[in-house]
Amino acid sequence: MSKQARSKSSLLKQVILGLSMPVVMLSSGATWAEPLKIGYSDWPGWVAWQVAIEKGWLKEAGVDVRFDWFDYSASMDAFAAGKIDAVTVTNGDALVMASGGAKNVMIMLTDYSNGNDMIVAKPGIKSLKDLKGKKIGLETGLVEHLLLLNGLEKAGMKESDVTIVNTKTNETPQALASGDLAAIGAWQPNSGEAMKRVPGAKPIYTSANEPGLIYDVVTVNPASLSAHRAEWQKVIKVWDKVVTYINDPKTQPDAVKIMSARVGLKPEAYLPLLKGTKLLSLEEGKKVFVKADGFKSLYGSSKIADTFNVANGVYKQPQDLTKAIDPTLATK
Image (tube, rainbow, N blue to C red; front, side, top):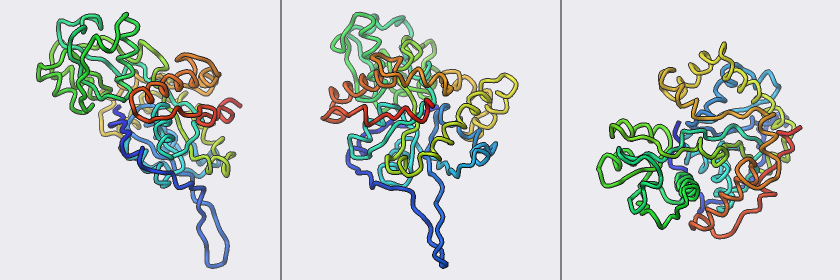
């Protein structure tokens, strides 16, 4: 599903409040801790948590967690304002938040985009090479821009070989239908809508062509992580149960019913979007947490995203990846 806007503008102006877990004071003087608060939004790897919520698995694990539903950019704003302890974002956007003062630590992977992010071309264009000298509509500085550059490099082309027209992601379907563009870059459901509006339009390059270009993570306020490390460990352990339930053919229909209801779609409409997302078990995530260059590593992928962000003026100074990622809870 959509990661609405993946916006950076408001985040660069906000500073994290350094929130640790607040407590509620009683008249008797006793205290109890509030639940861990996690912001999540409309993307299959994050909607997957709905299964754990409705099945009661987090309570069974002995951890008090509240998931708050947001539009994507609003979830990052809430995190930056200290209203929640953790948020589900792309690894690149975790770096954007940190650059604006909203310090965070990526503690687990939920998935990577496996086809939901696309370069969609109008009829007659069969490959990226066919885009030479033509206009492509996408939101500059965001992940589809990075996806395009990755594809162009593989095709032996440079960014200067095409003309990028800065287009809001939710406006890309109309932009492709207008006839002014040869292609657009967007993620589901916008990419799918573009193909509906322009019969014969099809993806010529997707995130499935570069697994690990876009990792999705749970990232936590460092103060909350320090104060509640054992609780965060329990949250992470529940994730394996979620992935197994969604991937098991026997239980997948129930999982898809739960997930699709959260976003207001019918299960049959949601299933293709789920298939464009590669959910990562903890065991699979361990391999991604290994320090290495390239897209098979969260460190390598984040380094590429960091370089892209600096080059495109998203922020000025490279981020410290050793502080941005803590693999220890997810790799125990």
